[in-house]
Amino acid sequence: MQLSVRRVNTAVIFDISGDIDLSNSPEVRRLLLHEVRENRTPRVLMDLSKVRYMDSSGVASLVEGLKASRDLGSRFILFGLSGNAREVLRLSRLLKVFEIYDSEESALSS
Image 1 (cartoon, rainbow, N blue to C red):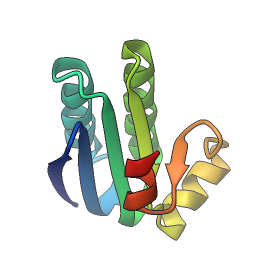
Image 2: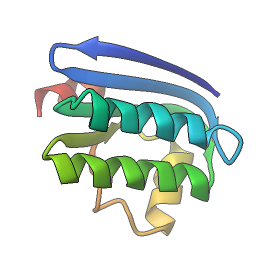
Image 3: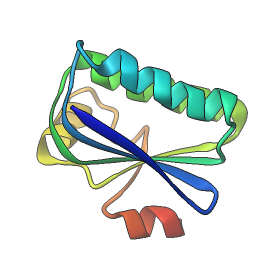
Image 4: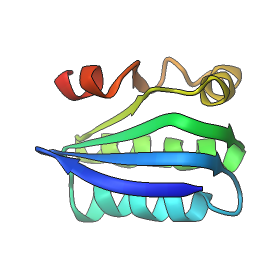
């Protein structure tokens, strides 16, 4: 997995490529929660367009990020879901729980 973080105005975007699984989801969770809880970033966006595989620990990291952002009144947005990421969220019945956009542009302008 490769993960990079960039800032666009008041938003932080996590660009993730590769697999989000048990071996690396703790790092995703740590960075995500730091951004939400410590930095109190008003909008955290996750680019999942290059995610090849995501297991239940990856889903749990996203859910924890969503919960933390809701607790603090910030927004947690997913965009560009790869086919695999979309299918995992569909199977876990979470597609309607998350705020999801097709592209970075639409997510940033929301």
